[in-house]
Image (cartoon, rainbow, N blue to C red; front, side, top):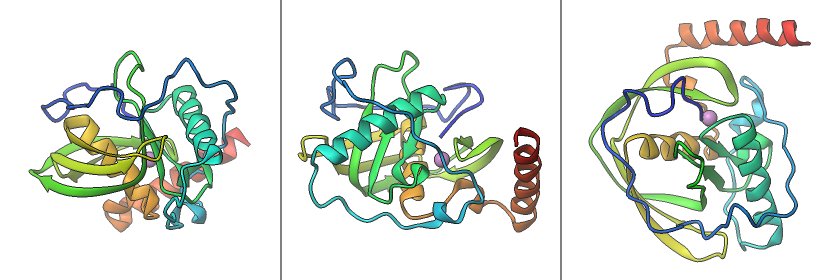
Amino acid sequence: MTFPEIGADYCVGSAILPPNPSGINRDNRPFMALLPILRYPDDRLHTVARKVEEVDATVRKLAADMAETMYAAPGIGLAATQVDQHRQVIVIDVSEDKSQLLTLINPEILERSGECEGEEGCLSVPGIYETVTRSAAVRVRALNLDGQPFELAAEGLLAVCIQHEMDHLQGKVFVEYLSRLKQTRIKSKLAKQARITA
Ligand code: NI
C-alpha cells in the first residue's frame, strides 16, 4: 500500500503496537533481494493465498525480501500475493522513520469497529489514489516470524493498511471497491503507462 502523503490528514487515531510484535530485527537480515511486484490488472493478483503451514527459513526469507521490496518501492505495506508468492504473509511499516516493521503470517481479523474513509494507493496500481471505506479499528491475530501467535489492536492508518493487505491475500485489489467505470479508466491509464515505460 502507498499513500500520497504518508499519514497526512488521515483517519484520526494511532496504532497501538506491542513492543516489536513481529520479532524481527531490521539490522539483522543478512540475505535480502528485491522482488518484482505484479501490476494490476495482472490475473495473478486474484489468486487466493494459502495458509503458511510452518514458519520456516523459506517464509522468513520471503518476509525479509518483501520488507526490502516494500521499503525500496517505497510503500507502507506489501502482501506476498503482490510478489507472486501465494502464501499468507504481509509486511507493513506505517512509521515515518521506517522503524516499526510488522510481519503478519496467517492474519485473521477478530474484531472490527467503526468506519473510516481514506485515500489509498497500492504498489500494484502505481500512481492511482482513490477513496475507500474501511473499518476504523481492527483486532488481528497472526503468527510472527518465530511462528508464535500474537494479537494486535490497530486503528487509523495501520488498521486501513492491514485491511488493504489482507484483501490482497484474498485476491482483491483496492480498486475493485470502485465503480466498473472507474476500474475501466484505471486499467486504460495503467496500460498507457506500461506502453510509455516499455
Ligand atoms: Ni496494495
